[in-house]
Structure formats: C-alpha cells, structure tokens
Length: 517
Ligand SMILES: NC(=O)c1ccc[n+]([C@@H]2O[C@H](COP(=O)([O-])OP(=O)(O)OC[C@H]3O[C@@H](n4cnc5c(N)ncnc54)[C@H](O)[C@@H]3O)[C@@H](O)[C@H]2O)c1
Ligand SMILES: O=P(O)(O)OC[C@@H](O)[C@@H](O)[C@H](O)[C@H](O)CO
Image (spheres, rainbow, N blue to C red):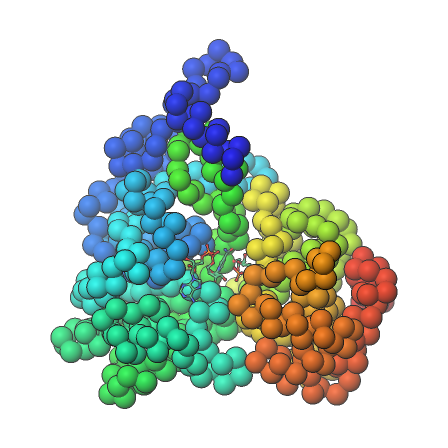
C-alpha cells in the first residue's frame, strides 16, 4: 500500500507528473460530478442526467464484479438514451470500505477494460445512491419497499445462500435468527428481501423481481429456496404469496474481474488522470443471459447485449463447468506449482495442455450445447481470456471458497463422468489439487490459512487423512455421495500419493500424457 499511496499523494500535491516529453501533462483530478466534464476529454463519462434516473433497481452486495458487469449494462441503457427508468441503488451488507470510497465521488467510479492490445476506461454514473445496510437498515427497507423498485439484483457469493448442498433446504444461521426476531433491522439479504416483500404485500403493491448474479447452479431457484425458506420461518401466508407472485429468473453471468490492487489504482490515476478511490479492472468480454420471467416489468437490457431465454441451464452449465471448474483446477494446481497469476500459468505449456484436455477430453461430453453457441470457439476464447496478461488475475482469487464452489462447478462433472463410465482422471487430479492445497502447512506445521468459511475444519480433515482422502470425502455437505462411489476413494488416493511422491508438475504431466493416448 505504501508506495502507491505515496505516489498518489504526490500526484495530488503537484497536480501533475514530471513531464517526460515537451507535451503538457494533464492534471490528475478527483472523480466527482463537478469534474466529470473535464474527465470527458479523455474517458467515456455519463452524458445523461443522473438526477433524472428512476431508482428502479436495487443491487444487494455491491462488489467488483457487479460494478464491472450488471451496472455497466444498466449504465448503457441510460447512456444510449434507451430509458431513464433504470437507475441503480447499491447496498453494502458487510464492509464499509466501498461506501467510504464512493461517497466523496458522488457514487461515480471508473471501469477499465484491459486486453493485451490496450485498454479503455469509462466512468459509470448509473449508481445513483449507495446505502451501507448496517448503518441504515431502515433506509434499505424503505428503498426495497418503494413501489418504484422493480428489480433486485444481487451478488452475495455462493456461500451466502445458506442452502444445504444436498437438499437445497434453507439452513438458518445466527444472523437469520436475529432477522426473524428483529424484522425491522435485518442483517441478511433474506431478512431485507422478506421484510420488504411483506411491506409491499400489505400495501397491495406489486413485488419486485429478484435476479441472482452469483455463480451457482440454477441461481434463481436457489434464491427462491432461500427467500421462501426464510419467509416460511416467519409466516406461511407470506411464504405462499412470495412463491406465487415473485419471479426469480436464473441467470448466467460472466466477466472475469480481478480484485483491484492499490498499484492498479495508482496506474489508473497515472494513465487516465483520474483519482478514483476504487476503480475496477476487468476484461473486454462480458456475457449475461437471463430467464425471461420478470414479475414487475423487464428492463430493456436486450437492447444492450443481454440475452433473454426461456431456460438458462445450458448456458449456465457451459460457463460454470468449463470456465469456473477450470479456474478452480488451475488455481489449486498452479498454486501448488508455485505460480501466482493465471496468465503466467497459461504461458506454461504443461498447464495450458492440462486445462485444454480437461475441457476437451472430460467436461465437453458432459454438458449440453446452448443454442447458437460453437463450443470449440467458446473454449478457445476461454483459453485466451485466462491468458490475458493485462488483467493479471491472481490464483488466490480463484482458490477462495473451494468448499462452496467445487460442489457447483467441478464435483457434478466428476460424479457424472463416474456414473457414465467416462474419462475423469483430469477432474480427479483437480480435486486432488484442492486436497493438497488444503494440506499445505507453514514452517511450524500449522495449516496455511485459506479463504473459505469452512477452511480450518476441512484442512483438519484433509491433514488427518494424508494421502487417504476418506476422512474428507465423508463430509457429505461438500462431496455428497462421491465417497461411496466404488473405487473412487482408491483412485483419488493414488493421485494424492503421486502428488506427494513426485510433485505437482510430474503428476500433471503424467495425467496429460495418459489423457492424450
Ligand atoms: N469477479 C468475477 O470475475 C465474477 C464473475 C462472475 C460472477 N462473480 C460472482 O460475483 C460474486 C461476487 O464476486 P466479486 O468478484 O464481486 O467479489 P467481491 O469480493 O468484490 O464482492 C463480494 C461481495 O459480497 C459480499 N458478501 C460476501 N458474503 C456475503 C453474504 N453472506 N451476504 C451478503 N453479502 C456477502 C461482500 O461483502 C462483498 O461486497 C461471487 O459470487 C462471484 O462468484 C464474480
Ligand atoms: O468469484 P468466485 O470466487 O466465485 O470465483 C472465482 C472465479 O472463478 C470467478 O470469479 C470468475 O472469474 C467468473 O465467474 C468469470 O465470470
């Protein structure tokens, strides 16, 4: 943090960089409504009247991804003068940091699209307000209950849905119990949604549509299960009203968006002359496919590249089983091999071959092909996207929350391949990679911390088993019945022994070679 912060202070103090040519260098200016016009000389900035936007969308849990994806689509609707009816109000539920960054800049922020050929930046204006829920639960409820709110989008991570992975039943935690006891000051997304829907029902107002933008299987159904599950603990009549009246379209979302580092913040200031407290760096690719089942008006997102379909499942399976599963496999195996960035890893022919074969030889046969998609082209694009050096996506980001991601993206392919007697050695190796990742210890023999709510528990099981995965596989909340598939534990144990004996490169090389035969 120290270096870029010092650099930014220098930029602010002097207003310029030391010029390296005779050209005058533009000032680095803060990002606010007042400076927009000046930024407009070098960046795309909102040219519409932000104050005229109707706040019809509430986004719950604004993070890097929603700022690079959903908000960009709504920004396009306003920027292209398609409609002023779809302004977005953001809500933060956990950390105050984003509010602190956005408030001084009138909720404006910069999105930088980077490809190997260059980059372009735009300032997003569609976020007209941002509420930090722990400080203002009443204001968030008022906003959600306001009849002008017609769509709620959300990115709360797969772990946030509180669903039992096997039964998809809602499993209340302490915060949910709090929300049931204090409905007027909720802490969880479900407490907010259910209380607001109840207020709308009592007022005779229409409900809003809830669009999950998290990477989990049938995310609309998952959201419905969680919201109705929560409501049923409160009031059966309300739960029935939600079931009958609220639409929860499933969606497939895609845009690789790394976490912004302080160095990148400084780089954005330097290149685009904009002092944004929290810009977002992303790739040029973006895709959003949503089921066409809105209950209170559908935003004109089809005019800005969103595809509406009857059933999103094929798109979702293609994306999560190819992109997200490959991300996890590369994350764990690459980390074990000592890499830190996926683009660098993809420059290593061994890992590029591994992920190509994983997709071509094992996963492709297991997934339906969505209408209008050329799967070979799609996979070729994925390889290019993974290798994009300009976004420098870190493996640590890909490794987080394995206990909730693998059950959605990787284990279903493995289970299906086993059931159908199809090749699965490379999928098994990816799972072994996760187990070996969990087993890493520091110089004092303590498990290396992992970013996963269930990390310490799963690390203890992985370490207890060593090269025998049975103690971990017995954890049905993650693995379902995988541990009881005849022969599978022995097969996985064989891979763990090889990893232990020969190391990750030799194990990956042997698996790739065997797959090629
Ligand atoms: N970054 C990407 O490339 C990308 C692409 C597609 C989908 N997604 C999905 O978007 C989601 C967010 O990713 P991100 O990259 O923006 O991460 P992020 O870390 O920038 O933001 C995550 C947000 O979720 C909040 N959150 C975490 N747990 C929560 C919970 N239990 N309840 C409510 N809020 C919670 C955090 O406070 C934060 O605001 C993830 O589910 C991810 O799979 C990300
Ligand atoms: O954000 P996570 O932790 O769920 O997953 C990490 C990445 O696989 C994911 O964010 C992808 O970059 C994204 O799904 C691409 O659209």
